[in-house]
Image 1 (cartoon, rainbow, N blue to C red):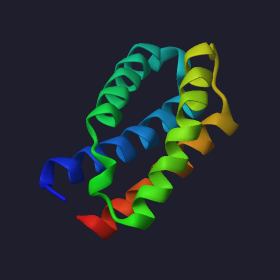
Image 2: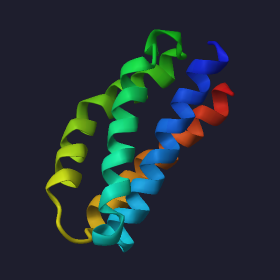
Image 3: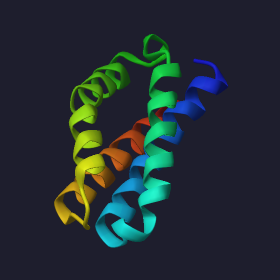
Image 4: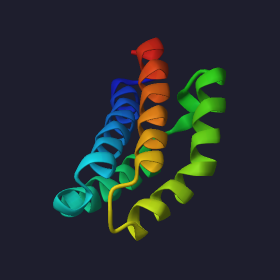
Amino acid sequence: MNEKEKYLFLDIAMNLNRLGEWVTEDYKNKKGRIDIILSQNREYINKLNISLLSDQSQKTFRHFLKIYPSLEEQIRKEDKWDLVLGENLMTWGNILTHKASLII
């Protein structure tokens, strides 16, 4: 795996943690930033060549890709903080950060 792919993977994980924190604590004041991070994450996801990941990381990321559209939709339609959604995002951020630590 090349460095670009590794850092895209890690950037996605870090963005999930940011989103989780903002959705949980300060949704209304961070709405503009949330929209920017969602767009950025979509771009990173589209650029990432998951075939370069290890088999286990591919499996985890493919599972993430199945649920991410639902998470993204929930974030976009929220108008207030949401503890469950925020925790879900941070959990995925932590899972992917752990996977990134194995490949970086």
